[in-house]
Image 1 (cartoon, rainbow, N blue to C red):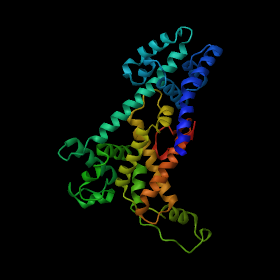
Image 2: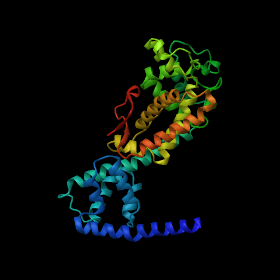
Image 3: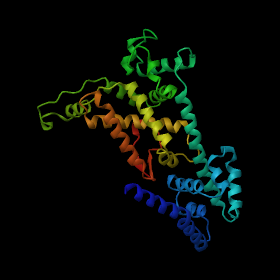
Image 4: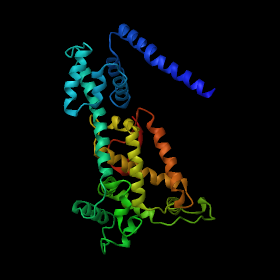
Length: 334
């Protein structure tokens, strides 16, 4: 019975998409004198709300030119827009803003696709201890996070001080490749104060509960106890794990909402790394709020945090704060 209902539902969805929806589009064009792309551009402000609708319109179009527009090279975007305007018989002289709007949205679409490829390439590149550039990045990460403590050797238990699992960090980069190292180093360099504070907090043991009421403790002491109540995770390992979370958001398309709202045209690796910094800081706060009993609850907390971010990004007007300082990042409703 369930299978039958599913088949019936799929049939009506197919009927809607193939017949009713196309009929509605035809009526709308005749009534407004504008094609679907025109209506989208004129009725939606620049950002995810507009670009997502344009992306959907192009993807489900019957015309090969419109479908192929989603995968053109960025250098071919301007010509593609001219071809679309000609196909739709739209005069660019009387509709100058339309071409500009379509170009901005199409650059976001093809730029997102290019960003996924760039990030995937970094993820697939393994850490190589024979590669001088890789080793220099790793040494730089140590100096940023432990500026006053010299590293006694390349293979050393000291690496555990910044949250790696053993004496050689290269084994921890297996899952995310160089992407994990790039993100950690970017965070340590571009928001050093926040990274150092998070590292310090992560090294603190779980605070023991007190029998005194908050009112019996002075404010600074109570606030400090609240902050320290549930720390105790490996900073670098969590950074690599949050890199995996950011990567999954990117590949699944969930980050389109954010990137289409903050990138005027093509999203960049820089904006992906800023997103990582935001997620690191927010996860740190979320970990404290959840107050897990020990690190064994990490997967549960991470999954819950992931669901929360996904819910926020379902709002097409939602974005991460576009002006980067990770210490000031927060979700804003544009």
